[in-house]
Structure formats: C-alpha cells, structure tokens
Length: 517
Image (cartoon, rainbow, N blue to C red):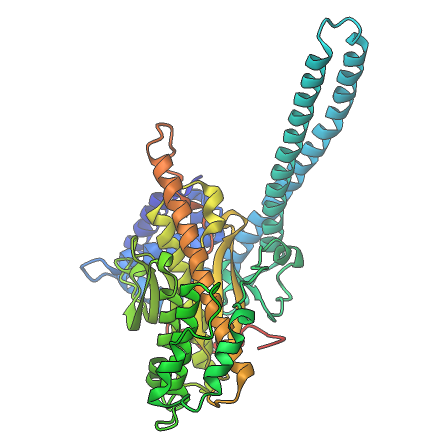
C-alpha cells in the first residue's frame, strides 16, 4: 500500500481507538493499514500524535498523546514493534533474493537464444541480397543494441543491489536500543574525512556512498607572493594595511577578480580584527565576538565572492524558513546562506560557543540539531521542485558549518541523498582553526582553503538546484505526469529534532568517532 493510501487510514484508526479508550496495538495497526516502511511508519505515527494534541478540547486521548510525545515516543521502541519491522525486513530480503534468482535464470536461458541468432545469421549470410555496406551498418546497429542492453542490465543490477543492501542493513540492525537521536537510526550515514565507520553499519553500504572526491583548491601558486608580502608588511595589523592589501601591483594578470576579492577581503578581516596590534582579538572570549570577528565575515566572503553565485548570507539568530509553518516546529540557526532567486537555504551555521569552548554535550546537541536542519533544507528544496526527474535527487546538497565545542576547530559537513533517496549521507569534508598568532602561516593557509572550499560547495549546491528547477519546468507541462510521485516522496530518512528538555542523557556518545580532527 502506498503512502497516500496508508496515511489517512492510519490517522483515522488511531484516533478512533484513542477516542474510545481502546489499546493502540501499533504492529497490528501498521499491518492492517499497509505501513511497511519503518521510517515512514514512525513519521506517520508522530504526525497523528501532533494532530491529536492540536485538538481544541481536552480529552483522555489528548492527554495520552501528550504523554507519548513527552516520553520521546518510546512507544515506537517496543519489542513487539521491533519484531514487526524485523519480520518485514526478512520478507523483503527474501523477495529480493528470489528476484535475483529469476534474473539470473533469465540471463542463463537467454544466452542460447543469442548464440542461435548468430548461427542463423551466418547460415543466411550467402543468401542475403544486402550490400556489404548494409550488412556492416546492420551489424553496427546490433552491437549498439547489445551494448544498450548491457547498460540497462547494469543499471537494473545496481538498483537491485541498492535495495538488497538496504534490506540487509535493516534486517541486520535493530536500532531500537540506540539513542533516539542517533542519525544512523534514522537513515543518515555519517562519513567523510577521518570519520570511523560504525560497526553496525555494513561496509558495502558505506561503499555505495558517493563521497566528494575532488575538492577544489585555492590557487596559492598565483597568489603566494602577494599573501606573504601582506603578512610581512609592517602595516599588517594596523589601520593603514588596507593600502597594501587592496593593491594589485603584485597580482598576476591571470588572477580572476572574484579570486582577488575573496583573498583580499579575508586578509583585511584578519588584519583589522584577529591580528590587530592595537586591539587584541576577542574570539576566545564569547560566541558573539567569535562570530562577529571571524565566522560571519568569512562566510559572507565565501557566499559573495562569486558574482554568478547569487547567494545571500543572513547572520545572527535566524529562523530557518525550511521549517516555517510545519507542525509548529521552529529552528533558530546562527546564520544561513540562501539563494537570491528561489530563497532556498543551502548553508546552515551552528556556533557552539567561543573559540576553544569545551562542552561536549552542547557540541553534540548542535551537531545533531544541524543535521536535522540540513534535512529540512533538503526537503524544502525537493518540495519547491516536486516534478523534477528523480535521477536528480542525488544532485541536491546542503552545507553545515559548525564551530566546535570540543576543540578550537571549525568543520564543514555536506548532506545529500544517496541511493535514490533511500539513505542520506552526512559527510565531513574539511576542518580548520582560526589562527590568533600572526606568524602561524600553516593555520592561515588552512582557513583560506576551508572557506574557498565552502565557496565552491555553495556553487555546487546552486547548480544542483538550478538543474532541479529546469527539469521541474520541463516536466510540469507534461500531460502524462504522475503528480502523486513527487520528488520528496523518494526521500526516506527523517531525523528527529533534539529537545534539550527530553532524551538528552547520553547524547555525548553520538559524537562521530574520528581518526583525525
């Protein structure tokens, strides 16, 4: 049964049982209403609870719903429900194995037919009145057809492999005992630079995630002399440094204006605030100072340094528009980058205190919160262009920048759908540290590389949205368009927004285990 048919039936069944004071047997209800997907089932149940809570009158059912929500939906983690999901996973895995068997058998039976066709062709070759050119052309067409068949078989095999991998993943792993805010429990796989793979997530699932392999690098070879001349200048760190910073006398003519704008504004920010001789930096004193002197300006440079990017950066406590009007949920970010035309948010900033703050609980809470916000941004993008080709879902990506509360690092993560939306990857791409010392060239180079990468990641996000927009516009006028199969419907994972008042015990254990920082 599809989502569209199971959703109303699930809502009405639960509401009727609650109104009559009867026991809510969730496995039985899921089975009767055709709910076969764990993530979707939990999402529908929570939506029903919210609807009951929003009823204008008080009732035993409303009090029951508030209790369910107040306990962090522990109702969803019963042993009976866990057995139900396990039973479904086993059945799916069995169906996939049977499907694979039929495919293998069909391929085996098809080989003699292909050989017989070749024999028949040779036999009739001398009787044919086709010219040599015609025969060669026909053979070429047959080769192309065979190649196309092979490609189609490979694509189909990949889809089956993805489905099998996911079924095995769900069958093997029972996350009901995991922390309620654990991202993997909700289908979001954390990975990337230095991140240790979870022992209970299969390696072949990690292997199917398309990581960001080629990271754009800043052109230091063209600008190294300029950078060092600024840093070694006696005026660096004084109000008079702007003259040398914004001078192009030492700039190669091949350097693009956008590139020079980025590096010159970055160096000026360091000279004026972080490395100022007259006024020592306050980035270790408070979160506001850290953001004001370093994080906000550098993110603004990254989002504004390319004219074609057409992005805006909104700093300070900002309500995430992707969640406005959705079940009353609010999300206050410390900054967002959004596109000028569509107003879609593509970068989210969470600052967990002043630079050097040590508060693991706050750090992990903001990390999980950031993942929830990024997921909401992806959903908002897919809702904006619902009729784009589903093959483009993996082109969508959003960015999470997090200033740490377990060390002095800034980290950038990229979230994007994988395996046609069956899972979502949350990839740590790079980290850096703001150098408070004027002579720490290595750290400064890391900062330049970090925010240059953020700029390029923003460009990729904008390009992905533009591809969705064009595809959506092309498809929206198609007469045979299936309007029930929107792009959002292919996205399975649904994380929970962490609540500081609920279920936060042990949240520090959710910090991704790292080999490197």
